Image 1 (cartoon, rainbow, N blue to C red):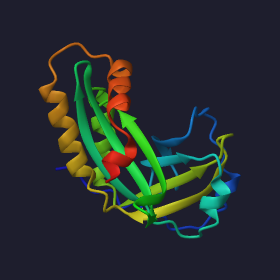
Image 2: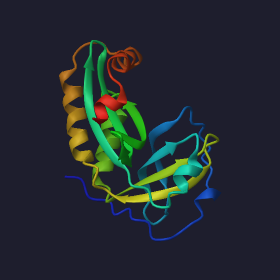
Image 3: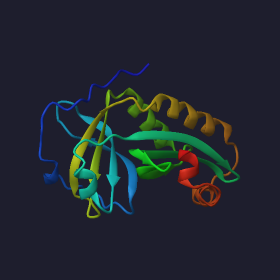
Image 4: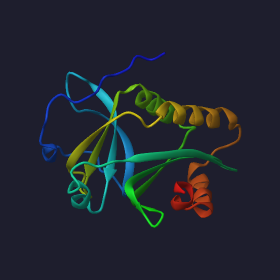
Length: 182
């Protein structure tokens, strides 16, 4: 069993001073390994790239939830993570982000494994230019160990050739994130 990483932040900082050198494309959530505090060391964080980060930052505290699953296609599995922010109004969350990953890719299960051992999840809110607007810290109650188990099962079950781009297109043609949210 992996050792738990207590990655609760101990210092406050001005997150707007942090600019990620890596160019992010598109919007939504991606995982990245970063060192937010030297005494903690590297950890996996979620980067939320949003067109209008001021609206999210303006909420002060931000509650976030996660639904996940695997969709099998003839070209391989697609692991979907649906991040959503309450409140729910007329059956829809205030904000929702779909993160699609390839559970067959060797790094995905390693990322999920590391996330499952962290005591906290840090979500960095970025604007389109990859400038960090703020950071949110959550106790890690996102069940990443269960998501890891689902991803590992999908990886073991898949025996054919894999084309993640085609698998993603099939997934997107058959499912809307709101269907999976509901």
